[in-house]
Length: 330
Ligand code: SF4
Image 1 (cartoon, rainbow, N blue to C red):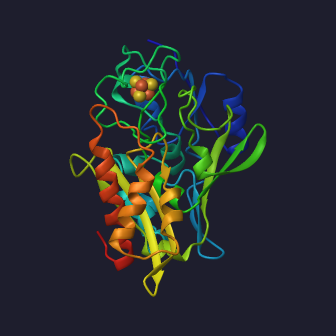
Image 2: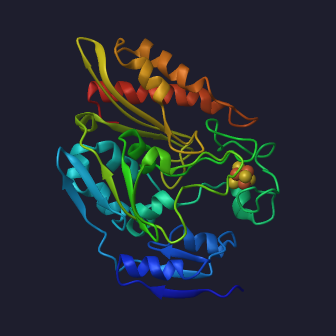
């Protein structure tokens, strides 16, 4: 058994100081990922700084139709907040399709964004895994890789980023606000999630002791017609094989604006920028959606058991864009 110590922070400054004082510290909010990984022997945290008393639970209006979401707001509360449902249904839907109801009631928004990008080999404690033990290899490359990523992979790691809501946040250019020993920062959500490259153990740019304090979502009229679709092996408590956050608008049959991101296929929440660029100014019809989806998936690197994701992702993109364009609710 490894010793584990605990302290409870009074405010943000206190939390940063307590975390910075111990090189093995981690923040504890909902605990749904960190405690799980400590139990599995994957997390090496030796000191937990409980941040549940910090006043970071609000979901607030921002000028121009944006949102400010506190880092400690629970997934359930954000999903049901009227301004989220009304302005960004894709964010609400992504939250409701994530995890289980019990987990959504505990898990926080900041914790959701900080959860480990992981696969069963990381959790088993014995298989070679570059995330758990850098330099040992990646068991998934030639192993059971049905659920693994096809976009943004490297020869060091092909684990899929697990978050649903992060996909919707990336689609809408959310900004992650942090506070830490070096001061405050605002990090674009797309930059917050790092590709594995040669260092898959490094998943985000947070410094030790740096804490997410909130998430800002800029006002975006396209958000009102946004959708989030999730395709998985069973209809609850399951990671996505493919998911899509989509919002599209058109005038006289021509696409004037689009937001598109994919989950379940990337080593990070995958903003489909190639597809977006191909769509704007072109026809808003299924053939164009199919061409854009194919263009985005051209970069896919499928493995032995996950090649089906390429076609599944193409179809998911077409369906997501079509639902958004028609104002249909999945
Ligand atoms: Fe580890 Fe990543 Fe390979 Fe899974 S895919 S075994 S997490 S290195």
